[in-house]
Length: 255
Image (cartoon, rainbow, N blue to C red; front, top):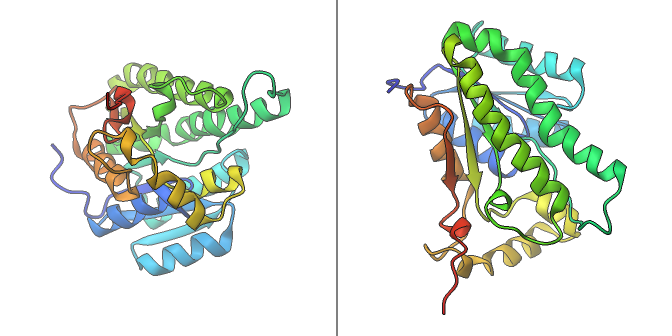
């Protein structure tokens, strides 16, 4: 086990809200030098400034190759020339079944949730090999439960779960660990946006899903961040697909 994240440089995509913001706050609290990215400059600037000097921000779209390079460069500069971790958190959701699926929607989801994190990892891997660092991908409880109307999103997350395991095998010889976290129900802005709800309405909707979790509550961003911290520190853990879902993926129901 690595002793501490103090001073370690961590790049987090989609760090302006939800799980990404929670990870930035939690890891900076452990002393990590965090760089967050996002498309909304005002939002990520506000988050970074509220965290303090350990958090740097860079505006950009992870789907754009030039922006990915700027993200990596910013994280290296903030980290004193090193990069220890990449958390591929940025993503979008998509609510549609087979009948409503179109090529543009499917391509957009796959480009954001699969292509972009893989290409960012490709870009960062040499730096991660130098630091013997870690990559974390974000899956979804939709890979555990077959929920109608979430076809494209579930497909994208299933792809990234399997890709994380292949990369763990591929990059192990370079001392780069690759793991994946599977969150359960966590109220985030991307879910609110796709349903047209305001953040408070979305949070209320998600809290009504507490009965689907054996532990009796939905998740908070810090719950996911704690798992990320473990995976960053655990130097004999790679290829793990870690369910952090309050048991939602068990398909729990009260009879």
